[in-house]
Image (cartoon, rainbow, N blue to C red; front, side, top):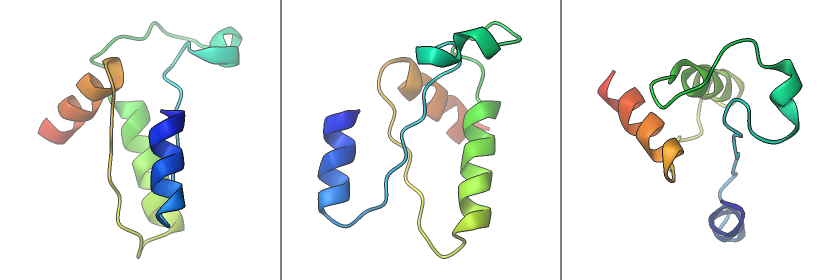
Length: 76
């Protein structure tokens, strides 16, 4: 994720990396279990980004579990 974010950033794109629930240092704040069917977190991130930058195009790239969530959200 870091490498692909850096490549896009170097080409002039703004990038945002999202840690999945229970990943990294946020584990202490998690109030529900996470699984590949939980796409509402990503949906809320995208809605916030669209609100803050309505003219900016959005592209979602996911790897492994993140790819599954991105595909699920696209289907919804």
